Length: 483
Image 1 (cartoon, one colour):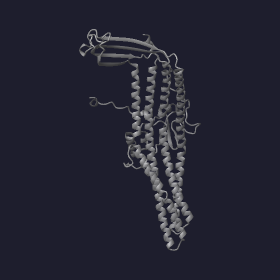
Image 2 (cartoon, rainbow, N blue to C red):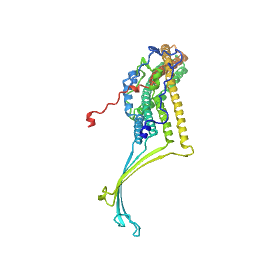
Image 3 (cartoon, rainbow, N blue to C red):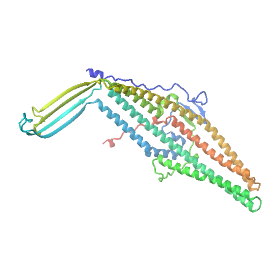
Image 4 (cartoon, rainbow, N blue to C red):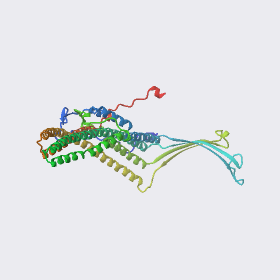
């Protein structure tokens, strides 16, 4: 009865979920309209709106949706994370076994011979050679008087929960990486196309200059200068082609393919539509949504429970054992009257001196809790920094894209005018070279600015947790599967 009453409590501190930070904004002042209906970088911010599970569908790219689906199915890192969750869950279930008695069965057969000069024969018949058959069941039970076992189970459950959130972090990282890899491929492909357009234009202008040289209208140095400009533009192609090929290899890896297994889908910046409405989680909700914060919280929970384990190890340990069985000289006589035996025993042990070993283990557990608490706060601060950094980036992206597009349009008008002058024989080589370079540079800058804006939008979804909590629960197997 006393053990039953004591088993209702557990030593050590009970875990309390950390309160969310008291801040109500991600950025100081009114730099970002975080209220409902606010607008940043031309995109509407919906403060407090929920994030869809398949947030990448907001970019309205069918090929991207298909690629991410393939990555979720085939990516090896995600498969490893799934297995790690099952390992942690199995270990947590194994820990529960300590709450129950351990029952072992033993069956032993031996053939023995005693010395003829023995004072008393070992067998009841007096024979010096005999068989001995023993069958017994032993029970051992360590009551969880102080709750140390339950604290160990609590810690194992928390570690399993941490592993589950680690899987969600891998899932979010994978989907974000695939989206960013596709955006980067689109940027490289568009940059290649822009470079080839400038090369085609420079080649056409070079042909005109050569014609004019043949007619004696311009000097050879003008032709050579344009040839040099054309060669310099062509130098940009190999690095871009290399990066594009490596980007395709990255997409193959992320989706569980070998590089030789080429991906049919290709991407251009025009393949994506910028989401015009962006959900923005409230600061109080962010700590419940970010997988890395939930991992840190679960680790904090596990460290808290380990203090109870350390305290329980310093208290008396009670062990109950029992043994029942039968011993006879042959199989046929087992369990006959007179062959049975049994034993019941109890033991209480208390460590008297261990040179401070158990005490220092408790101190270590308490300091491990302090360490986990500091790491949890660091992860929370990082989460808020990520969101703030992304919002600041989105603030600048719209201006960067607008400026890049305006610069490209101006450079395009300039190169058109200069090209017309070249065709009419009114050539000014310094102006022509400058116009070609400006057109190429502004085209590349515009493509990169658009890619950065798309990537920063992906980063916002990633910083807010990615909507894993909106996943549909697993569908239970149907009757035909259960049969």
